[in-house]
Image (tube, rainbow, N blue to C red):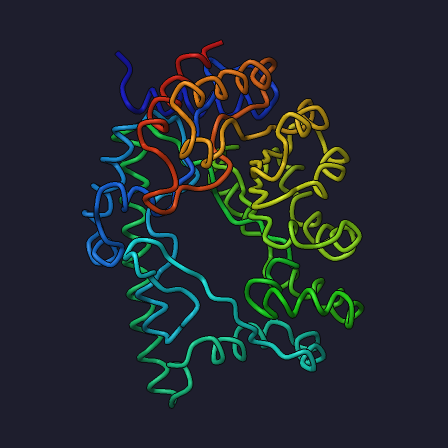
Length: 388
């Protein structure tokens, strides 16, 4: 009988094989969750934030009930206590006491592009935080106290995340798929600087200023995914990209504003043997053509339900790994046998030759996202049927 460490290494080897378009021992079965385990175990996010051991028990108990080789991420994704100390309003726990919501906000005005471009680092580090965090607008001593307390809270958050990561590996043999964040400068503008709506407007009314700003933002934020790849000394976990802007912009805007600085991020990762995990988070059609221009086996693309996986597979299946198999809507609404049939068709089609990870189209967040009975049955079947 294999130890959990041996299981972990075997699963990691399968991920490396399939993302290199070689056949692994088994099709990797990936669980994509955020707060669903909290809801499934009838817990509250606020309680898990205060108690790292409770968080570890909640997630590991769920993962003991469902078969999975790997997981996108686990735990509380945002340092809510630290953000609250700073006076941030961007994230909050929903009325269901489980899910976490994100509010869009614009912290930079359109007329401030010149200031952002002149001294990007100062604008990002010294000006934006005071707008995002209301408790950083006091005296120097008051700001110091706030920062000190926030750093302590953030350290506890990271310590809890470390405990859960260790438990996943050592107790369950489950591989964490997503490593250092690999972010397009355009998504940084969307998420942190101008906001969703304003960045879309700027593509039309201030395109030259936006393009210049994107180059400066790229330089300031650097390449955490490359740094993490070097730190890990392994292909897995993969540098990770969430394509926030891509589903909402035209192909011409994608090629002009999103792809150029992103390519500067991923090229050195690929050159050092890294493979990038991309969550499409919506229709990903813009991405398919440019991925074919990159070296084979450089990308893993998790498909959203808005894309037909069979059409995507025909287009890039021999060039990039696709992560798909069944949608959360199917797991919620269809019968168990219908779900098993869908999983079988996916494995029959996508598994030969490698380049396939079985998973859902979206992360599981709230209690009613799926029928647990269907989820457990499909994941067990995918593992057993996915043996090469």
